[in-house]
Image (cartoon, rainbow, N blue to C red):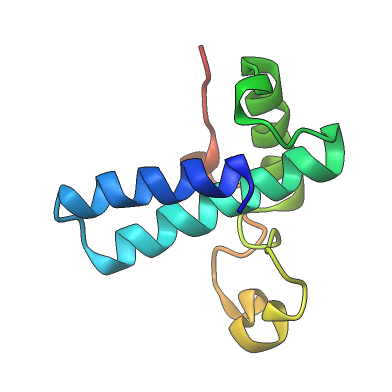
Length: 101
């Protein structure tokens, strides 16, 4: 288990202790795994202690450019989830505008 995986698992245990819904837990875990994969691929970061605010800003920019439902952990999942069938797929709606301070 990598340090990133350990930290994600640790955070998920914390969230579980807060009685969050299964759907929320699954969403959090998926989002964190996607972020970890992005950091590894684009910045060769495998140590959570090396993540800086600039990396987070770059990831948000990347998500906005690619579209909300175009980023997946495994490209094969697109065949099963069909994100292109969603009305908000690759949307540029105002709800997608994020601000990081």
